[in-house]
Length: 142
Image: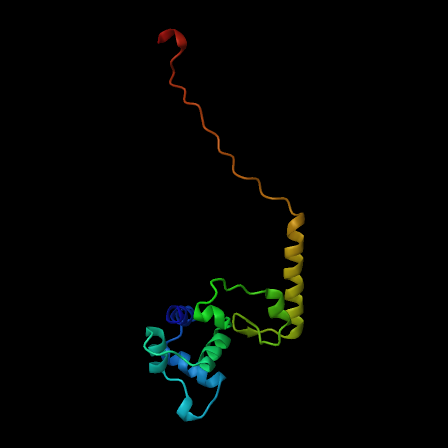
């Protein structure tokens, strides 16, 4: 499960193996002997090698998923947006960083939307009616 999920997450972010290795090395600097390489990540994705606990932790953090999701222990990858807005993680929208005032306003907008949703009228379901077919015959001409 891990190789498939890693590949899907990497491709979902439009990252090459080299770009992912660079991103890991940039976000989690180590000495040169322990840097991540594209071939190492390729081996993980093919299931040839298994990453260490620390590497799985770094990947989960980078992709903002749980280690359980990445390793296949859970199927559902649900995020609580409320917790995300109050966390200390940096948030961006379309590449633009959100400051604390932005985060609070967006949180309030989402909270208002979700809580106001219960008071809104539901759109009526489409009505399906069968039309009658008039064949132009009356009862006397049968």
